[in-house]
Each structure stands twice: as structure tokens, then as C-alpha cells.
Image 1 (cartoon, helix red, strand yellow):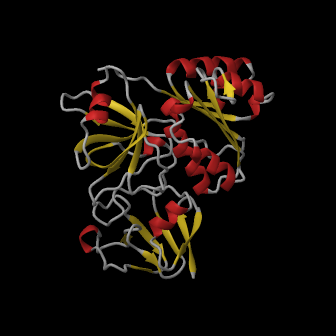
Image 2: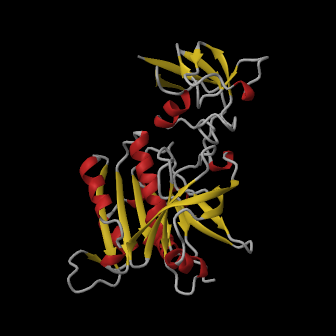
Length: 334
């Protein structure tokens, strides 16, 4: 059995199963309700029950609710009928306040000689709310910061996934590759950044990644799948050598499993002799394959020279600035 949840004042509606929390149902259907922990500890998701009945399978969290009104916790409440909630909806990055918090290194996985994937875990009473494409800052002991894009989609938030490239002379990345241990406790600020999907558009989406720019693009594409966005999607991934394609099977899997994801094109700028795929600069491959770029929303993440060259070339091809979204990676060397 499912029930209809109506949000006030927007009037937006979604469905929740009888044994599913209201917040879980909202996240599953790409409804931007606020939350901080999803465990009933923080109260960030508090809403007002205007109509209908709810239940708390784990017991009512009295300490966070005001007995004088009809406040409720969507992260713990399940519907017992169709209900109407007065709740704030999050639509833009500016509506999620960044927080400084401790985080534990749960798993370290080396994907290539110069790429490591980290899985980070927040304390049990906290859960990261972010939009696909945003990033976090590590706050070092001396106050310096190192920024890395979040690679998992917002609905898949048991861990925060990062892809970190080793930078020659980079103190933090060298430490991450040679000394970082699982269970290490670090400090982060998240979420940050405005490189997010325009979900109001109806144009097809073209994703262009350079190196570890694949991380935020991965988050956006997996979010689009989860949210049921059916607009056509293509991915071009530019790297130097074939070994730099550190998750080559994943986009191939997307091609097989999702009809909206029509093409994955890896492009190598310094290929070895046994490479028979595309060669050169990734933005030039995009231009060669598309006569109508102005009909696309283009999402780009990677090093500044790639972003600069692509933006200039795409403008010349007739793409307006408001159809180009980008995250330019600057790598700190100390």
C-alpha cells in the first residue's frame, strides 16, 4: 500500500510506501526535503503535519518535537494515510548550509597508479546532504584546505566517495597515497560549489570529464538515473593514457543498463601504440561528433586549460553561456 504526500506551500506530491519513512520516499523520488542525519537526532528535517496520520515505528522522538503543535520528523515518520506536510524544499546549492564536521576514512582503494578512491563515513548521527556535482573541503591542521568533488550520487549517501589524483609535490595527496590509514579521522566542510544539474531543462545532456573530473560527472549521471531523468546523455572522458581511465567499465555498464545513456567516448591525448580509440583533445572530439551543440546542456569538469579551451570552442559553435556548466579543477602543489 502506498500513500500520497502533498507538500505545502508548493503543492508538489509524491508517493510513500506504508513501511517507508517520508524522507526516504522523498529522496527516492528526487524531492529536496532538508535533512542532517536521517536518524532522528538533529531535527533538521522537522516539518508540520497539516493533514492526515503518521506513525513512528521506532517510537516518537519527543525530545525534538513541540507538543504544542503538529511538528513531525519525516526521517522517522511513516504515513498511515494520505498526508499534507508544510515543509521547506531545497532546489539550489545555496539552500544547503555547509557544515564543518569530522569524518572517518572507511576504505581506501587504489584504482590506478596515480588514483585512489576514498570512502568516508560521517558519525552515525550525521548524514551528508548535497546536490550532485558538489564538492567538499578537507581542513588541514594548519588551516589550509584541499577540495575534492563528491563522486557518489546524493541518494547513495552511506559513504562519501572521492577520487584523488596524486599530484607531484602535493603534500596532502602524497600523504593520502603513502600514509593515510583506514579509520583515520579527518575534518571536512561540505557541501560546497554550484556545479549542479539544471533539472528544469528539457535539453539533452553532454558530459565532458578531464581526468578526475569524472568524479562529479559520475555523481550527476547516477543521480539522473535515480531521479528518472530520461533526457539523452553522452559522456566524453579525456585523459592522457589508457591507464588513466580508472573506472573504464562503469560507463560501459551505463550504456548497457540505461537507454537514456547513449554514448561513452574515451579520448586519449598521449595514447600508446596499441590504442585504436579516439585521440587528441576531448573538446575537439565533441565538436567533430556534433553539428548541433547549441541544442545541448553541457556539463564539464576537469583542469582549467580543458575548461577554457572547451568553453571558447563551444561558444564559437553557437552554445550560449547559460547552457554550459563547469567545475574547473585547480590542483594545489603544497
